[in-house]
Image (cartoon, rainbow, N blue to C red; front, top):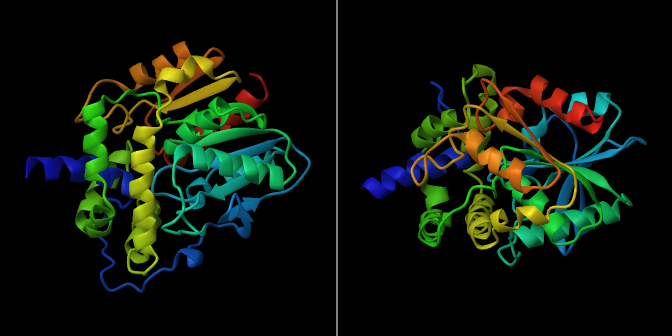
Length: 319
């Protein structure tokens, strides 16, 4: 029982939901393709998979935004307008298995596969170089792009990055065994709601779209394939670590962490301060700088978008 409670407390946080008085038991199912991100997506076959992305177009320097575990491109809705207004060409992607992208059981979900897919997307859009902005798991994928030798990454901006915190073998096995597709599917709405609140320093009612989206999309048949992708993604984060290779990241890197991040470090397996983990990244990555955002949790790009957007734009301007 204790193990199950820990799993619910740690993993459901990453899956979705919020602390709110509303429930969606009687709400209509929400197909993934019908989720409203606030911007349009296009589809194409990239690296052998059906991929969805948004390309703002324009002649400015390119930013590639990569979402985290169990989320989607819509989690950048508070960032895209400011970045586009600053003159950047912004590409926002749904990783395979997530959002409006394809969700095949045969897809080899993994950090290297995701890195190769993003590199192939940039190639298909004839983008020679981009700054890759990753959130959480998206940051580990972004670092993997560099470590796997991609020449298309000009700079990394890592928000609440996964991959810096080290997990021992036993801890990794526990996480992989905990996050099964069945667990993702069976996570009850009350547990999802209570746990996502831990992603934020202070939950806002205008973020209710997160729980509604998660609860309604769980009612569609495609959700089983999404749950499989989430489970395989967790396994890949454990099986394809980057923490021991940080010194080999050879591009300028900006790390942005939330001072009140309740996910990093893992509060049950490690405990400690988020800033201490982020400092490891700053110390080990040769060209890294760190910014800690006050009054922000793990979803800092949603909770403090104005400050995060300013930090991204300033770092690109060399300030």
